[in-house]
Length: 295
Image (cartoon, rainbow, N blue to C red; front, side):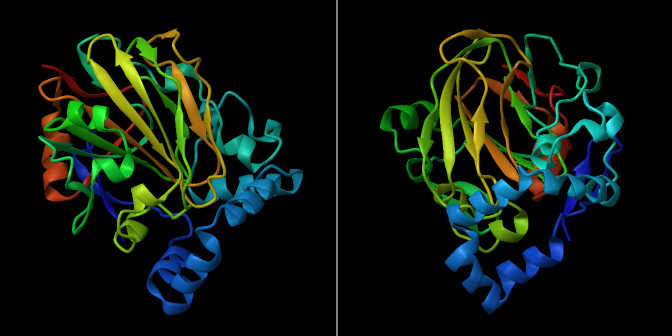
């Protein structure tokens, strides 16, 4: 059972987890963990499942998925009949009015839909994955120059569920560097897995880039893949000017995570998110909504 804070209703909700029984078995039983290490975490498994999700046969999966998780397809640019396969639906685009962008240049917005946890005054040698599990910046991104910049800064974790809108966006206007790719495994990023796999973010496939933000200095974007996420697709043009809210890329099928690093004394995170993070709860957010403001 995963409890998430709904900041709009000011209450806690129980998250509907896609494949919850399967995840519990896979990450808790001896047989499940053996299967995980032998096959599920491997690129081959995610690649094969990705091929299925790209096939016309997988279109049948859309209707049950929408029904089981009560997804409002009226917000999509395409009708449910227009999607060619499950991955086409999974990376669906939404109508702009559904995700309004807070245009105030001093407001920091969420880069995507998901569940957010924030850590401030971070120690880069002891970053929190989940309570009891830690990792270091150098294990996540082996770059000494970047490491110096973000010590005692802010770390934002945005976890995307399979049911979420899976495109991610720029939090400000600016220019983004080219993407660096790091090969890795394909563990789930669900809290069920985070409690079992040490240094999971450092083991999974990931991509990173530096965003030269107009109002929040240089921000390190890290996109982490997960089980069945065969591809992280970057749609932006490196070293070109982008506007706040513009699309950066998207994840194909599966849950995923975005990690943002900001320098010290750049960002003040909203108090409700900080409070829930300190209590060990994620806060549900939507792409484009304010989650903090400029110092």
